[in-house]
Length: 156
Image (cartoon, rainbow, N blue to C red; front, side, top):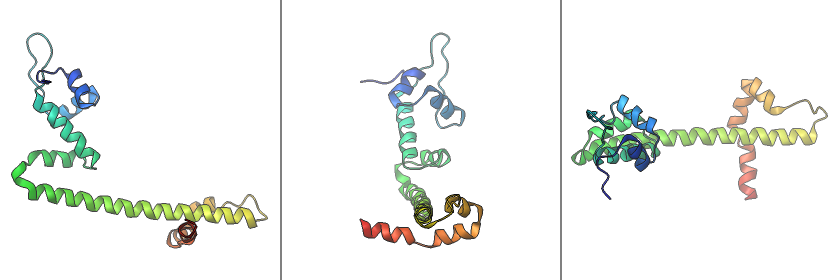
């Protein structure tokens, strides 16, 4: 199937994006806007479809549009530079995973603490989650204590 000579709406549909995405990519310089003919609609070449698909694939891997712009400047002979960008992105993703793991641990601890509080407390108005969010010291303690995480792992 030949995809050369696509209008913006057909290009967007073929790339599985919104027309506004195509327009945005044009505004920020990721894709070129073809000349408008004296009559009719702009026609986008097949290379634009390939480029939009490249951009979307890179975004799914976590690259920002600024990083995608850097990748687009590279060619097949600049694999070392592409590798450096990918390694930098991987480090950021690993840091994000560590941050998310710490957040999960803290939330697990807060929920566990709340459950214990409900079982033992004579004061049903005392909420450990609200207390921890109010007092930074409690929250830091919860973040550093793998109470619930250990029991969760041992329970399966």
